[in-house]
Length: 186
Length: 90
Image 1 (cartoon, chains in turn cyan, brown):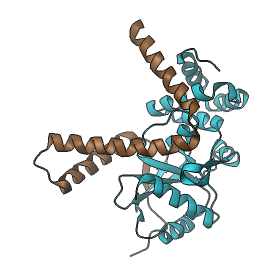
Image 2 (spheres, rainbow over the protein chains, first blue to last red):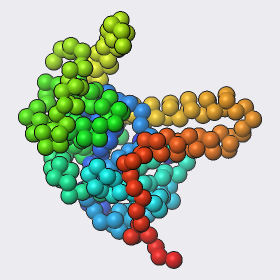
Image 3 (cartoon, each protein chain N blue to C red):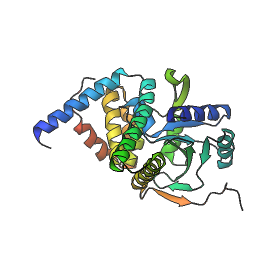
């Protein structure tokens, strides 16, 4: 099973179990920006750990939870990793945290139709991808969001972005990225 | 970065942006996974070239080691292991 098939099966499982989810990480920034290679598919989910365990177990032997749970220090959420049999691809599930931005980002998620896999998936808005990646601030996040900003520029709700960057203290980082963009039409 | 290199980098980036604006989200989704497969195939080829003595299992083991290393570097200082409350008790 390849990564795309694995991610599609997980989306199906969440839909069938009525588990609210959205695709985040580099897949979500690739939706809005410049696609790049990724080693994992990241999902934010709003369901108890036991429910997630039940759903993933029900997907069969191709999907296996890694026993080690992790605490993610930026937003204070927990992460569970799923290994896909015979695949180098990994799926990561992040529990929806109580962080105000995390909550709002999840509420604002949008459904996007993906004809190539014949599915609709939930993703954050472009603005929320930018705000989140600014918070992470790793070099790969900054590259990703440079792409998102450049591709989406005139369509972005800058007031919304600036409201959160002010709260997160990431305005300087955002301005630096905007200044680094070459002239583009639109 | 000198001016010529900076101009070249800008031109390449502009090209990527213009291409991305022509792609649908669905095409970009598929591309992410295709690029992953390409990256893995390239890593496998690199391992095989560097270690001609390895068989398929050995190459897979080295690939696994490199992927784990990549993950450790990327996640350093961001994630802290915690006990899993849903794990079955012995």
